[in-house]
Image (cartoon, rainbow over all chains, first blue to last red; front, side, top):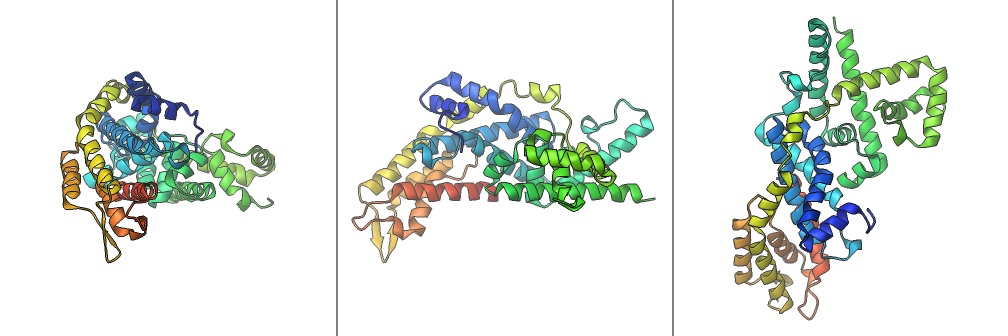
Length: 191
Length: 173
């Protein structure tokens, strides 16, 4: 758990006491983190923004309920934020039947733009295949992998947000990475 | 650690190009091993290629610009609904504190007027948040041990259980 002097938690407390500037500062501090978590599952920039908005609303609602309690009895705001973002993004993609950026048609998400047309296309196809595979990983592996890769969270924070041990998070990450590596090898060996 | 297999989890993590996340002793051991093992250097390259393709590019200008009004939008959403929610909670907690909770055959029963207050809360919520008051009410009903012998409620424990139910509900939504 983050200490009582955690900047995020201090800002939440100030917001709950009526400080609107604290609210804006808190959103600004964390919007990049939330964007990085949800964008893999979003259709476009507006879709990602909507998911981010819902994430913050729910996290603030949770904070309103929990921050009246003694410090030892409540979870840090950031932990709520990460967990809610993960759940919302996953459910959003599932309900809409779409897996946004895994689409091979998402040119923005594809590497190789500066290469020749053929090399670019080959790289684009490989990247699309790997990103589809990410979304088809078992849920726990996918969550750990994307929190590590996209949000660049340390394993300790991933573990706290997902309520698993740090070791379990590392094992899930390894299994996920191994699947992707094997997928790449299979693709290269295919005639 | 002695075999290449033992190093594999470290290699996968090292391949994210976030070497600082490795324990310094592990990082040093891995570096020494990589210096002398061509197989593991090839593994590192394979993991790096796969994870590099899996990683999304940096957020675009369009994505960042879409966030320009995010604080105002979130504030607007929060400003729309909280008053009735607060009233719902006050009704529930007030009823519990006043001893209106009736214990019947080891079951805790919430008066219907309080239930209606919670229903109003759910109906006016702007987004589909699992209703905290309804969750609290359900937790109280399902856990008769939360009621003390003099009719009071172990509210802190009830809220703790309601929080757990809230997270489960978000996950199941």
